Image (tube, rainbow, N blue to C red; front, side, top):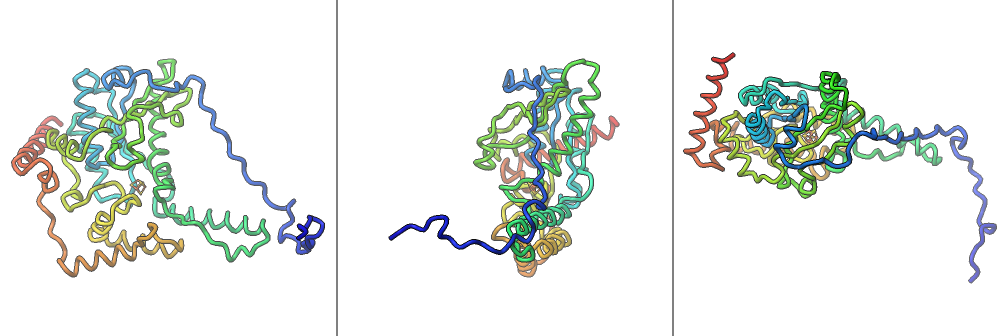
Length: 366
Ligand code: SF4
């Protein structure tokens, strides 16, 4: 059998809907150039040397259990070194997406631990949920533009899911990382008189036990993306090797208040409906915050995709309603319930005493 040559193939007559010359040029991605002064590797990974050698110790706090365990651990080390004045706690406010009272809780944890400076940063413009819609509009416009370029019907395009996912963590960069970088800019400006790049030690409460991806993270590394000629940022994950039990033991020891959501049975805090959250956390969220769950369900309709692959908010709400019908509205478990599961009832009672004392001492001192 003879193989058809290029000349045997029929000529395609239909012209493209948009002539190639008229197709809008794709914007070129600018290559980010890291400033030459930014180191490629940290000079030390020894915690006390990291604290001693830095200008600022910035503790990122979501108000969750890992953040607060990290906070009390870092504060203890900084205090022992006489460097508590360097510590700044920053909370990225997620607005209605996070459990009510989280910002206030993060502030109380910082104040009671002895930190003087507490900063709240917030992404400008749309909140996290509204950003899903904006992203959908962008993705749809892109898909339609590409369909036109291919000579296809733009009305029939399939728009990729706009929701955040473990593979598309744009929520973290938009709502947390970006706003926290604005604080780095301010902190660097405050020490501009040093005449050299300001050194920032950014403490993050990520743990290896949370996921295989987090297990791969280095306990200490240079954050080259956040660094520039005015600031050098080193990421430190002080509790990277800790287990859940280690975290709760640190909370018990510190006496710092923890979020009520844990007593309700949650494993994670931060966004009530986090794409990385387990189903029981999500159902728990829908039982406690039904209006927010309804807003997420409405957004599923707007963007034509489920909140999570294989799990829609409609289904989460259905499960929440089923539990409410079966058990009735749950009474709030006593404070300390989650903690006593790890450290026992008597240690949890001691923790409550420590917390009451800390609050009393703070009120008297301020
Ligand atoms: S808590 Fe979850 S949904 Fe919220 S910003 Fe973080 S990763 Fe995204």
